Length: 238
Ligand SMILES: Nc1nc2c(ncn2[C@@H]2O[C@H](COP(=O)(O)OP(=O)(O)OP(=O)(O)O)[C@@H](O)[C@H]2O)c(=O)[nH]1
Ligand SMILES: [Mg+2]
Image (cartoon, rainbow, N blue to C red; front, side, top):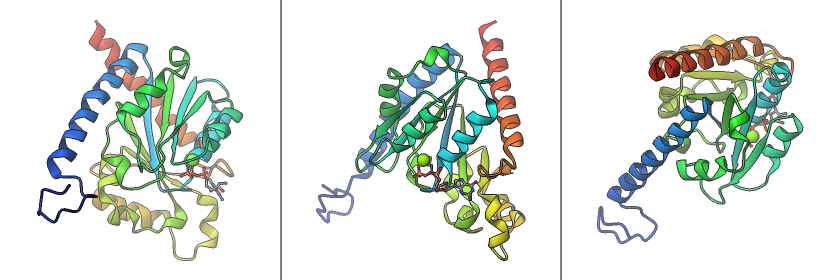
């Protein structure tokens, strides 16, 4: 029941309850982070609008890596096991989290899914979040890095309209660049200009999962991020 304005709307979650939900989530995300650190796994929270190419990016990544990095994934979706099925078909151990009506994954959902994956055999664990540019940005899952996919068909203004997401991520993958020739007036520099206004340290990799353009830059970013995390971890354990 809403206690903030006294309207009595039973659908409203009071502000202090929301703060408590986020605080509980933060406790569990710290627990997840400990798990990942102990196992030496680099964890990525992959976010983006519905259909922006998250699963296609992971399929193309697995193909390009060819087993040189041991990759595992969890896929969040309101319904169906389709993404996890696609990932398994691409050789990635993957499980689904079916959220029903929830528009994001939370730390507890991730914690439960960990027991269904061969974590000790992984170098890189990717959490494919529910397709959404709003809610997933708010919930920490215990990840090392945040990445968002933004497809060229979504419009150059999306970073300006959804700044919370774009301010939070370390990297934006501009997907489906093979479609640019069919989109008059849409340019990579247009997206970059929007990102420069909302991302503290703008980083953009244009990529096509279809023709492989940009995959090398993405894999270099992944390798460098893993190496940095391992160096930090080994300094801590000395
Ligand atoms: N032309 C083109 N199409 C792509 C590319 N990447 C993905 N697609 C297509 O875009 C559609 C959505 O791709 P997905 O990988 O399912 O997107 P997603 O972000 O995982 O979608 P949700 O998990 O449902 O949010 C599919 O039809 C893909 O084939 C690309 O690089 N180029
Ligand atoms: Mg997907």
